[in-house]
Image (cartoon, rainbow, N blue to C red):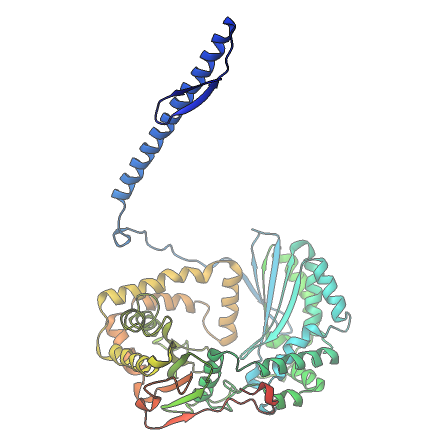
Length: 521
């Protein structure tokens, strides 16, 4: 056998068998022709790659920097069509059709919250919200409920948070009537099975035992106590003693106090016909008796527990410090809320002053933030912080303090203002990603007594905010002289010590009351 090589862009070897007969010549020519075709094909591929590369280089040469891009203005956002009505028993209902998928979802807001539970029984509201679903109903046990819902890939959930209670359901549109019936059962006739309450209490005790495992959780929990006071409903924590005080009868009483149709707002969105949905709601909730004696609950008073000071939680196992500084804040309905939110944009996030100065220039933290964080019906907090290495703790705190003072004295630049406003306004569209999100917002505004167009008023106010507005609200609402500082970290590793921040540093003991020695921290 002989080997022949044809030279081209690459050398290609092919074989010609030794044949003595004259008939072998055509086979040789055929194989030579095939080899040439392969060479031509490779040359063609190379030419195509070269042209593609040239086009890519040309496109790169013509590409503009992102600051040179001309983007169209944001489209006007409009609320989807919805219907609001009130049953004779006082139940407020919102309906919003959405036929994109064969799904229906609903949520009921109940005017309650764990801020209304007795101080000696902290955890009661949470247990009521959980066992209301897990404990079954008068018609179906918990296991029967679970099985019926699992067979239909549906869900019914309940919970009670700080300022509200909620019950929700999700189902395929073909299963709507069945699942909605179970949802109504859970709301109207829960039995609060004793064994499910016992399980919930055991789980709560497990959470108490582990609550000092995460330094950020410690910082968040203890900082609220420093701002609102350790006995405030906005800061108090569940303990072994309060868990032990809760009985099944307490859950029944808490439920009966707040769960009435004239104390609820129900919203449903999805693949349904409004007329049929109204009939279904009437059938399941129309005969639920209202409570004529129910009144809007009186909310706890709020006042600052501390007006300054440095506090410390010693955690010897840590290699870095979790830092929070701040003071009592305000509410969403403040006339300056929009300007304060633009202030947030100047301070925080990528491109914000804290990021540029404390993280990028000084290299003191990977994560740093500062926010004016309002609440709907009680004062929130102004809070700044982050995590830093132990030996940079004091420097990090001073850097945060300096930036808070600087935003009061140094007017924001036109670039800073434009960046903060554009970021805020461009993210506005994400408030309306889907109909359920929009419906939930409408319900929440009614729950707290805000106007339905509150978000649009806010949008216009952000657009109208000036640099002078930002500096004005920074001077009026930020109180550097009243800032509370909390550090969770390793005392021996923090050098220089925290006494460089204040003559007196108050230690906080986070030992869990009633805990066994092995779970002390």
